[in-house]
Image (cartoon, rainbow, N blue to C red; front, side, top):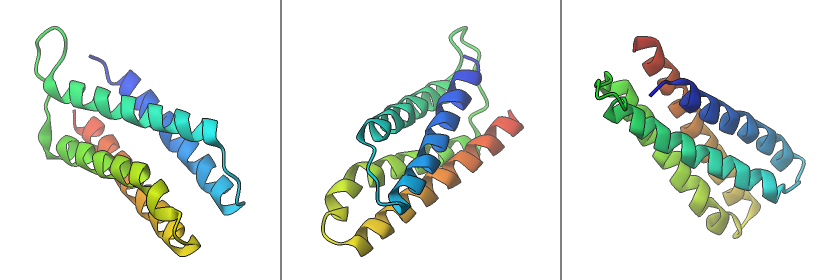
Length: 120
């Protein structure tokens, strides 16, 4: 499996996430874009895990600790993004904390993913 689909999906999810942060700061809610961001993130994480398992031809990829750490951070970011909607309804301050936590884990996972790709 090539890395281009994984890179494309995760990059698109990151760029949509940046747009959604700007919309959040303007107090706008874009439900369709949030759904696309969610689907791209889930698909990117799934493809990353598939890439860590090996190629379809049977050649094992070098998983390394960076790939595992990137997948873990993406998983935590997905969890905070999914549960954040329930937590953020309580107050504006909790919504800010949830968005900051989700963004931090997602950005850190993306950086580790890029480092993992550079070491492949």
